[in-house]
Structures are given as C-alpha cells and as structure tokens.
Image (cartoon, rainbow, N blue to C red; front, side, top):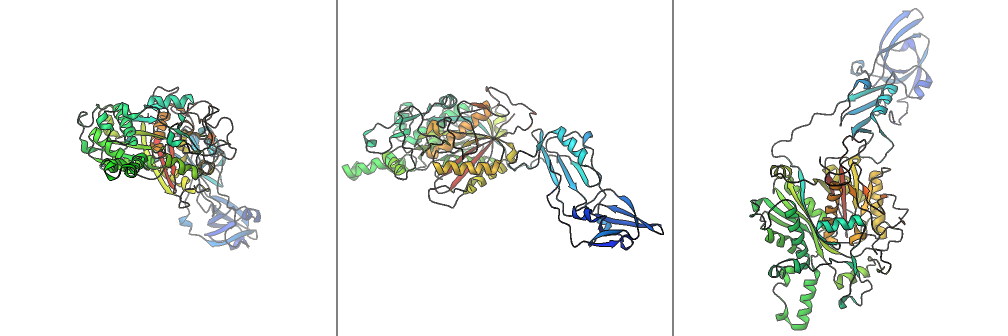
Length: 610
C-alpha cells in the first residue's frame, strides 16, 4: 500500500545553521540525511537547558504531535530557509483503526506530515474493500479491512498521521429533483427470433441468426449473408395496420407490445391500462428505418410513372415512422421522438428517455431502436467500404467474429429492441417487477473521420467515464461491459484500447453480441441494452460467439468465450446465483456500448438493484 506521494524534493534552499540560531517558526531538519529524505520540523518553542544546550520543541510542518530535542548550542542543523506561523500548524493525532467500525463510503487518509511537499493518500471503502482510486484502472491498490487496519497501525507514528473519515451523511434530495429511473419491461425482435425469450436462449446457447440472402435482388452482390429476422412481421400484426408500416416500424411495434405487456400493462395501450397518455413517451433510435420503401418508390416511378407511386411512400420512408407507429399503437401522446446518431442511435434514444423521466417530463417511456436496412443498395455500399465480412456460412460458424484474430468485418442485420423505462416511485406504487436501474448514460464525439473510428479510443473512453459518472458511480463499480465490437479490425482495437485505458488491469468481463445477431445498426443499442438488463437480472454473461479460441492478443480484455459465465455478484431473478451481499470487490454497474460512423459514441450504465 502507498503511504504518500513520490515527492521527495527538499523544499527551498537548505543550509546549515547552529541550534543557537534557531527560533520559533523555523523549518529545520536535524541532519543532512533527514533533509535529503524530506524529514522536516517546525520549531514551536526554544528553551535554554544548560549553558551548553538548548531544548527545542518540534512539530511536523503539516501537523502532528510535538516532541522535544535537546541540542548542543553549536550543533549543526539544516534550515529550510523558511519561517512558518506556528499557530497555523495543527496538532494532529492518528486514529486507532483497530477500534473503528468500517462502513461503505468511509475514507482513510495517510499523510507524511514531516514532508512539506507530501500529498495525502486516501483509500475509500466500496463493495467491502478499500480502493486507492475508485476511477482508476489499477487493481494493485485494493485492500481488505484487515490489511487496512494493519497498514494503519504500522504507518501511524512520528512521521505519518493516519485519519479515519466517516462517510458523509446522505443528503435527502429536494422535492422536484432528479428521479431514479428503472427498467420494468423488455421486448425484442431479432435474427434469433421474435421475443425476449428467443433472444436470451439463443445468446446463452451460443447460437447465431445469420442467414444467406437468397433473393434475386442480392444475387450479384459480393456479400450475401445478413442477420435477418426469421419471421415475417406482417403475419404477426393486423393486416390493415401492417400495410401502413415499414418493416422497421413493424419490428418496433412488436417489440413495444411485448415490453408493454412484460411491464404489467394491459394490452391495447395507455387507456386500457388506466394511464394518462400525456405522461408516457416514446424514444426510438434509427439510422434510416426501412430503406426499401424509398427504393421501391423510386423503382415504381421509373417503371410506371408518377401515378404508380403510393401516397404512403413518404410517411413510410421517414426514420421517425417506428416511433410514430408505436405511439399510435399504444395511444401514447406525451411525446414520440426519434434519435438518429448512426449506430449509436438506439443507445442515445434510451439515454434521452432516461433524462425525460428523471426531470419529470414523462413518467414512463418506451425506448430503444429499430432498423431494417438489409437491402441491396445498403449491402453494396457497405461492401464497397470493405466493412462487411466476406465469409460465408459454409463452415456453420458465424461470419461475424468480434475480437477474433481472424475477424474481417461486420455482418449487416435488422431487428428491434425496446425497454419500458419508468420513474421508480411510479413503478413501486403499482407493484411492478423491476429488472434494474437505468442509472446513467454518456455521450462523446470523436471528431476524427466520417466513417473510421479514432484509433486512440479517447472518445470512447470519455463516453464510458461520463456514463459511470452520470450514474453516480465509479469505475470500480463496473462488473460487466456489453461491447459494441462489430468485428472490424480497427473498431474492435479502438474499443478495446479505450476499455483498457478506463479499467487498466481490472478484469471486467466483456461480451459482444454481434456474432449472434450481426450488426443491427440503429437497433443494436436497443437489443444490446435488453441483453445487458437480462445479464444483470439473471447474473449470467452470455459468451461471445464467433471468437472461438482465437482471441486477438492485441485486444487485452477479459472476453467471455465458449460458455456463459456467472456475473460477479450474481443476479436477482431466476438466474444461477443471487446477489451476494458483502462479497468483497463486487460492484453493481453494467455498461452497454454503442459507437457509430462519424464518431458518435454512446454508453448506457445500468445498475443492479436489490
């Protein structure tokens, strides 16, 4: 354990003087060796002892206890060329840590009080252990209660003062302040199937939903695989309503209906559930929504002229159609917003909804993302960028291989993921099941390139730290990261470097879902948030599909591979383990990362609740 800063510089310009020349306020070292190792004292009092000696009372310059030295008048000491106000140097006594009952949030500080240039070293107790730096990545300066007591007893003495600082009393939030937001419902439509159960079982089993594109419109493309939803969504919706929705909106409505019911609300919407529709909102992310509508309209224009273009083409083309159709389907009138931030759209939409609830604009929000851009033109564009994996499905494994040594690009995909977010007091008042807290989120921008990621990962690291800070937590609280990890060479390296910069030598379990699903574009953040909620709830981290045993050595992360792994600290509902209260070193935050073309970075922080 560290005791002080590395500073050992002798202050000022030391020079020898005799003890007879010393007066109160002088800063002295008793020997040249003491001066060299920065061991100084302030003279608080002098008194002749004998004709040949003088009694000098000394106190450490940063505070401490007094002690006397009897020095010969001709004895040489080292003066620091500085005179201090004796009254400003406090009397300090070390606390006896053996008799202190430690609590979460307590702080213990150590100060080498004889060194005027010393910095105080502090340890904070969190999750049953003591951390030197709650927002640092070093796992070395983490100690137990017993080690802290032993260290405190060993260090405290003439040169060091060790103090115990009880945690501050909690301040009750003022009425009208930010509200806590929780997750009460989940819905998903993904390449693994329709419904959250299909998604979760597929993730735990290590299956993928990437398929061959066998339509004739894809025949000439260099890449003909994608993560496609295996069910026609039109078959699951009333025909009249489905005809007025694009494919992304159909996914969104199905996912929103599932999340609505999962949250304990009545099918049909706000009125049937006895809710004020003005206090409910929708916040969905999308890049394009469904590009096929516009492409189809253009083809009809060329083939049949203006009269061949449907009047529904424009309202079914806009990216906001998913949000508007969800609000129509459930009669939500509070707000219906759409966030477009490339592949970070879904995560940013969830973050925006968190703030809308926090600050009282709405009480409930359906938030997430929906996308359907598996079209020939989009596929051809991604292929021209050399962003897509060129592997097929011949060997039966996923061609999307996040963090793998042989990764060669992402696989395009489609789907939707929706969370029901709710003010905690609203959820508890109606007896809702709470999955976790939607604790915070963070944004940043790379300002690097229109498509390529910043290889330094600085923007990603900033978004991660901001999400943790917005959640009111520390880096030491993070127990899991659901990585963006698209399986591009540069993107995975940049994200891994950013996570190493934030977590340092801490082994935080990381998983990536794009081997199962492909890259769902604007829907990725919504679906991956659903999976992260389930990871916290069940206490199980799904494995990263596609990486096999060939993890890229340059990644340097604790990537969960092969089989699912128990989450540190367990889960809350139906998982393999419950939360183990008091387990040293266990935190409560899980992060879901999303990063998009143009440098859009968004990170969601979810907190386990007990």
